[in-house]
Image (cartoon, rainbow, N blue to C red; front, side, top):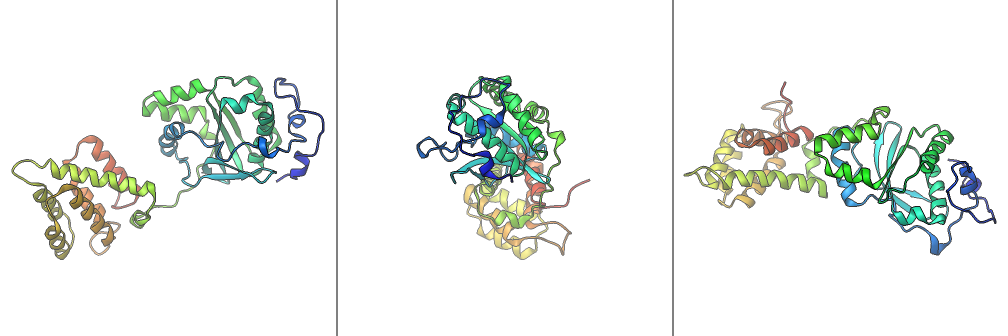
Length: 322
């Protein structure tokens, strides 16, 4: 990283904003040390939930998932600024958010210039900036080009107006993936190899895993509750268990534990299968949970079938079919 003191060396003359494209960015950056009452509050760079949720699925689809751990960068006044990241080979992509208030206040705009340099110096290979305004002019694009010119590690800086964000939110999921890939120019980045997940990762108690497991439990519960007459929910789950290649004692244990109430029965069944882990003596790479879920797939509609298959694939619960 460059010497911070060089970037924030004292300068007594007041800074006058960013209206002139021709003005050197260094003139704006030099001498800025925020006063305590003027500092941008923590978390100001975090994307609003609506934008984050809109980006999450397409970025996951193209191999650049938003990391679950929030990134943090510290300014010269030792204040931390939080942001979302996607990790790429030898760096990361930073997703930042600037509201209209930050764009219009000259002091904070000056501070913004310094932040751009700081992200580049700390490993950002791409910086993607969203705003709730359409007041993004060529001035900002030129500023981004200067960030890139100054730091060879930084490959892309992109600003997105509010109208683009609205469009991204309102299009269908398939077209959204295409827009993200093209507008972010993700082909210029190499995705960081992801660690292969296994059934053991489903034992981690975090919000993402819990939500995924709850979706699977709900699907199993719905199928049991809607069992064709004269089958009861208990009958359906008992038949489902019998279809597996679990050891007989496992089958007897779980069939005997069924209460006939779909929700708790589905939850207990999933947890039991997860606790049993893999079935290497029966079929390589097969797990008790994967075996159970494979048996329910033929009973499902297209949407639920996709959810189950994606879940099996993500956590490597069963061998991939050719």
